[in-house]
Image 1 (cartoon, rainbow, N blue to C red):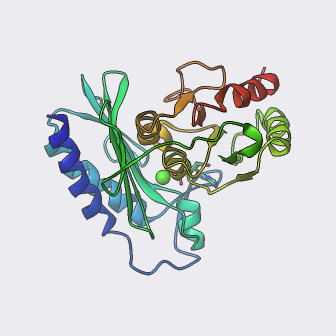
Image 2: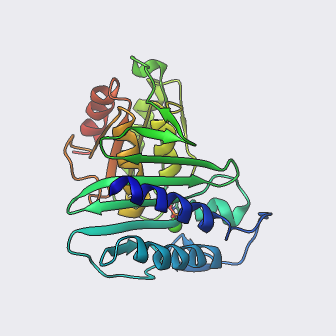
Amino acid sequence: MEQKIMDQLKEVMLEASLLMPEQISSNLAFETKDINSLVTEVDKNIEKFLVDKLQTIIPGAGFIAEEGTADVRGDVFNWVIDPLDGTTNFIHGIPAFCISVGLLKNSEIILGSIFEFGRNNYYTALKGGGSYLNGSRIRVSVTKEMNDSLLATGFPYYDFKYLEAYLGTFKEVMQHSRGIRRLGSAALDMAYVAAGKFDGFFEYSLHPWDVAAGIVIINEAGGKVTDFKGGENFLFGKELLASNGNIHGKLLSIIKDHFK
Ligand code: 2AM
Ligand code: CA
């Protein structure tokens, strides 16, 4: 049953991606939902399309969707949707944004899919079935030492409560890694960890739709995902550390030192 859902989801994701205008330009029209939280017609259109189509794949499934198109909970299944992750990039004409869809079965994410615009890369994973990029198996990197790692993060942009802890972490990670990148799309950061491009990723003030798909895609690619305490409250817990596994302990100990 789940493989069939995967196949149907892929079709829906690819169809949804066609709602993106062919040419992206800078300074698109947008609304401000909250401080630094922007939304465009494209976000809304893609979400409406996804909700409409996904309803028919699993009748009775609920939705946790960023733009609130459908806010109903299912008893067993819930789709977790970010129709456009990296909206700020999109509005500024920077090509780093994607669609991210995960499926919760009870309290566990069992499948995820991320469509990266521009490169037309489709990342997907089904729990227990491995992770794939455009049909080919992907795995996390084999980097052993944090000093050799390339890491991704997201800067705080609206919730500055832990800014000092974040900057302390940032400072230390900067001095013990090959470099830190900030793409502006948590879902893409996570897809890149799964594909072995980044060795790790950390961010706080995340929403479930930013990370749902990435969680299963990283786990199925052989990586590790935890919250900032090393525990499992990363889907709704607003903070997440992901890595290839090898450098997880070192990164976690730095984070724990600062986020006390
Ligand atoms: P969004 O584009 O779906 O809102 C990573 O930093 C996460 O924060 C992204 O997944 C992005 O999701 C969200 N985000 C929202 N507003 C942002 C902003 N002004 N700058 C950076 N990230 C932002
Ligand atoms: Ca979004």
